[in-house]
Length: 143
Image 1 (spheres, rainbow, N blue to C red):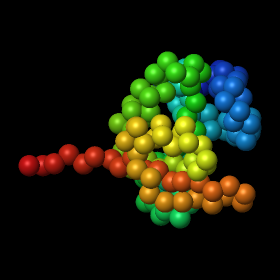
Image 2: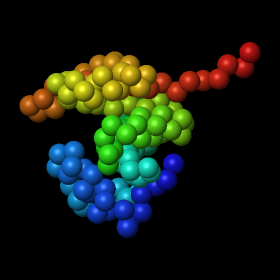
Image 3: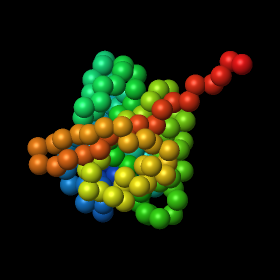
């Protein structure tokens, strides 16, 4: 996985704006790039963090080391790179991957289900209801 670099900032900002992700502040983008919380590869941006302690995503408790996926956006939607990069991201993460999405974002909900994520609970923001999805890390059998 390739972490985003400072020189990727403008491109990442434009990808987010293209997808109407205006809630992602530019100062946050810069900070997350510096903290290696952005992956930018093959025109796909993934923002995330690894939990440093037990926390929750919506009503779902997660463990230290689990990954919270914040956003994924493809510079060229429909070219298959989003799917490929998300699968690589799942492989790269050492533990379970969680995300929350607005419940009425049916296209995203279907995409995450197709990617093997399970709908496991709810998330309630101030004015919007959401769903929580998880991609469990497969543990190789010793037998």
